[in-house]
Length: 229
Image (cartoon, rainbow, N blue to C red; front, side, top):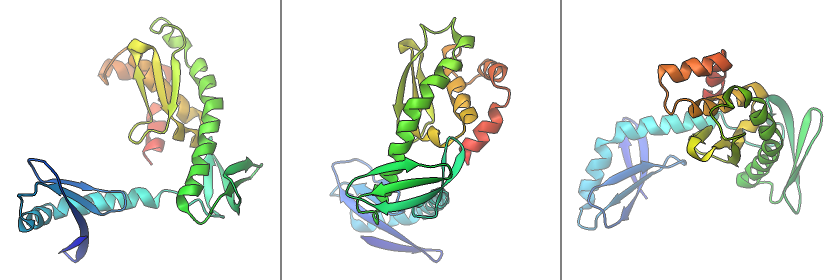
């Protein structure tokens, strides 16, 4: 691990030697920097490359920190959301991972509960289970305005997506939704479903596309802002 000071900030970076033509740089989720370069590139050149990109690196780190500050820690006392409703979380030690939902509290039973990834895994398990129950119902409810454009109610795929709330493959009559949507209200989930259904009409984000979206969900901008938070 190497370090660089830039405007009073310390940037940590690793160097990996690869069979590549250019020097490549990536800011990872833990805010460290991964640099790859050919064996023939001197370390001094790599250091200069990192220094030249320091401002860009620090912007990326700030963005990651802002994102992480909005994420729950999944510790007892954390407020977590399920279908738009907030619940108090209680974490319990267990020999296996599972959960229980009460009227105002969600209990996580977590193996090695001190490990963040284990607590997050239980939350993801909860979101996936809820999404399998709720998403098909909402997909069916949103279908009628698009019946003429679809080959029946589209096949539904539920995944944990990194950079999308959903996507549409009109030719395959397939809609994929992000399981993390199960944290949001049904209105927000519907807005994403309508967004994907509209791609059966227009395969782009043209003005005509947004006319269709506005006709089926006039308040889509409100829900889009909520997702961007």
